[in-house]
Image (cartoon, rainbow, N blue to C red; front, top):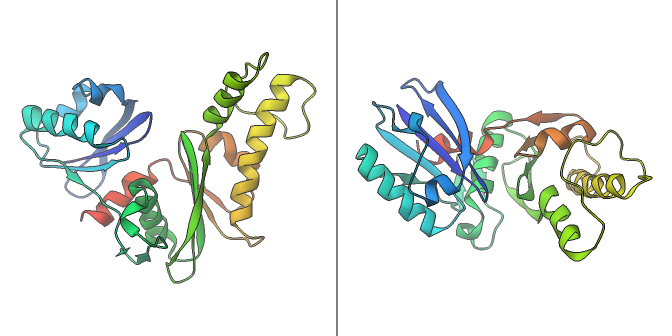
Length: 238
């Protein structure tokens, strides 16, 4: 079996794959579980022969993961890296290695599924929005704070604003502070994603922890892919 890890800024998504590539188990946990040298019990299951990793949490987390994998499994994790080209996609960055590996893997997975121009958005701690053209060339992207970060900025910079990220029933102007903040932050994020479509009916491939909060407000076609970054691991590390 293969263990795949998507280590983000605040959460870790994981799944185990059988030899034929089908998911056997999946889950998520706090990033602190790796920082403290602990991992959920299912990740120590017998029969694991590879560990494929997307890590945007920094080298310290990788050191802890390497130690855990060596001690618990006797395996050295394989880390995906952003490159100039891969799996039909060409990076749009002047320095390709500086593109976040999670964004790169999401682009690979989206292109593998669609094979056409599209927008790829990851609504996590930060919201990233990237564009692929009809040839698989990355046209660049945007990075803005995610919904929780936006709300936290208001909490720390103002008094009397105490909303938390949750689904909104409307994007109309709010008639109380909580509604005004939640709807405003949601509308800003939606506007950016739709701006990346450039007025075209490009398919949007959407992932990340806040994807389901945003999806109802996005124009079709919108494809929800919760494991998009994990899906890219087999393309970067076959």
